[in-house]
Length: 127
Image (cartoon, rainbow, N blue to C red; front, side):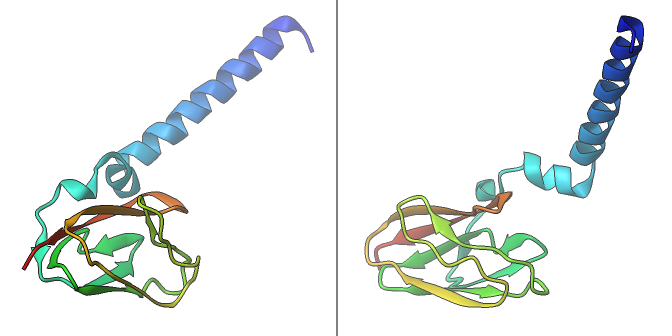
């Protein structure tokens, strides 16, 4: 291959890559990727969090100390996990539940390690 052909091939690949990335970022999936769902208002008393449509619902929950929060997989078998920044995490599964009891006040951020746009937060307050 001659140098001009190689340059055209590289330029064409670069343009195609940019188009794919731009299409993703402009799609609803891209919108989720660019937003931090942890900036939403907390749902007070939400002790059940559903994993559905590649999303934690609600993404932000506020509970009091001693509350057990249950994560419920409801995403048609899509695999996810719940990994907290402070260490504990669930298994990577496609169905079932995971629970965690919060004994100390604080803010607990978590994510699905398989989907970088799936983030959540639990705010624990004293009763």
